[in-house]
Image (tube, rainbow, N blue to C red; front, side, top):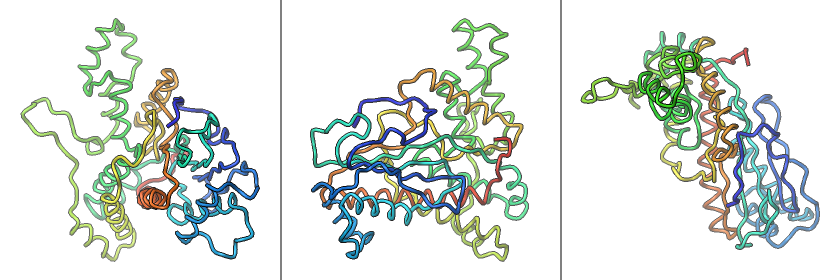
Amino acid sequence: MRSRTAKARQFEPGGDLRGTAVAALRSHRFDPLSLPVFDQQAIQDLGTSKEAAFALHWLDAGYLDESMSDLSATTLVKIGFERWIEKWLGETPYLCSMVFAYTLSGDMYSHNEREQPDDWLFSIDQDAPDSRFLEPRFNVIEQKAPGLFQTAIGVYESVVGRIGLAGTPETVRSMAGYELWCGTDTHEDFVEELNDMGYSEEDIETMLTPNDYRSSLPAWLLCPQPSEDETEPQVLRPMLTDDALTALAETSDPEIADIATSVLALKGCKEALDDAVLNVDAAPIYLFSLLRWNEDDQVRRAYDDIVQRANECGDGYSSELTEEWVGSDSESFQQWRERYESVFTALKQANKLIELLSVPDDSD
């Protein structure tokens, strides 16, 4: 694992990749009809023995065919990598832009060789997300199928939260509690902390507090809710059962049926995800999508403050979702590929659900 620590970067992702066996695949969110393209940074030659081994891995996995035998190993590895991501993830215009990169010849940033030359490096780099509004779709869906929208948000959080930062109002609230509110979740505790640090009342009035954030959102979007009585259980968001979702998936209303079907599909991805599948030196800072309630909420302000704080602190934050060294033998390659196929499947379903639950934030 490389030792550098990135800020919440403002530069173009993937721009510093180099080397003879490096390739990056850029996934755009803006044009759902465009296909990802490779950064043309690899020197086209016959390729190394390691590239030849990986070309055989992609051939065995069904992403290459024998008619490509006249192509270099470097090109074959890139084609296999591209086809694999296109098949399992494809275009995800409602998620943040991502760059998928690999190198077979050492660290793609420092260009140093690793002590274990049989390993290769794979990474996913994220970009800042677009924001979308939930309220317009909620008002329509709730009238038709009470509880479906809340269940969809809960499933989205629980599944996508295993991969990275889901980007719901609850995700941002949780981040703000740590980054902005001194680890507290109530206005009183936050003000007490600020007073102890010497902040004036005028200073505090200019700050976003937990109460400011909560008051701009429906209570069900933020759970569990804080309880004044510690003996009382915290209020959790109500969730429809699988039987209820299945019944809605079979309803004659195509809009409701599509949402219920998508929720069930995403829920079915949960068990296949490994909680520790993604690994980075620093904490990811970018969300998959910033899901706001409406234009009057404080979600955008809170997230912008979090990113600003990350840029001020520098250390401990990264634009990377994952970076890992993978063994180049056939078994390690297959295990890595299958783990990320589960991740990509979940993200593809999440992208579809975001489309069904939200509308663009035109103020972006």
